[in-house]
Image (cartoon, rainbow, N blue to C red; front, side, top):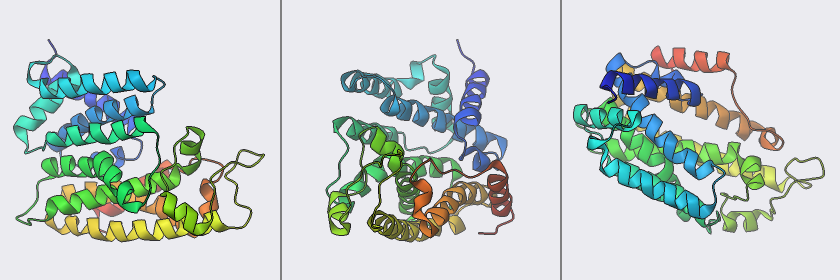
Length: 284
C-alpha cells in the first residue's frame, strides 16, 4: 500500500521532471501547497500524455475512459498519483469535476483537430487549460472575490493560446491544426512546410496571422491576471511566475513570429529563474 508521503514524493518527481515551465512557479509555494499542486499536475500530465502518445485513436479513447473511472474511484486506489490527489482533495476545495472536463478536452483531439472559429477553440482551451487554472485555484485559495474562478479559467485559456502559437509547426507534423479555419481563410494562409521543413510563408501572411493571434492572447492574459490581487503573496508569486514564463514566450512570438517556423520555442533556465524571482518580488 502506497503511503501518502510516498505518493506525494512520486508526484513531485514527475512534476520536477516533466513540468519544465510550471515547476519554476510551483517551487515558490510553501511545502503543503507545493505538494498538492504537484499531485494535480501529475494527474493532468497523465491525461495529457495519453492524448499526445503513440496509441491508436481507439486505444487512446479506452485509456482516457480508464483514467476517468480511476478518478471517480480514487479514494480506494493504491496508485501513487491518485492517492496524492485524493489527499489533496481532502485538504483543499479542489474542483475534481475539472478532471472530467480535461478528459473531455483531450478527447476532442482524438476526433481530428480542426476548429471552425475562435469560439470553438476557446471551448477546447477552457477544457484543457482553464480546468488546470481552476484546479490550481483550489489549492491557492483566494479572498471573497466571486469571479476568482473565472479569472483562473481565463488565465489558463491565455496560456493555452500561447501553447498553440509555440507549437504550430509541431502540431502540423502530427496532423493537428488549432488555428481557426475562418482566420486562416481571412489571412489567406495554408499551413504547410517548405522544402527545408520550416513553416512555409512566402508572402508574410502567416506571420501577420500569428502576430494577430498573439495580440488577442495578450488580452486574455489581461483578463486572467485580475486573479493575482485576490491570492496570498506566495500563491500570487507562483501564479505570476507560471504565467510570466508563457507571457515571455508570447512576447518573442509577437515580436518575431518566424521564431516558431522551424523549432519549438523555449526560454533558457536562466530566463525562467529571473521570471520566478521577479514574481516572488512582486514585479510583473
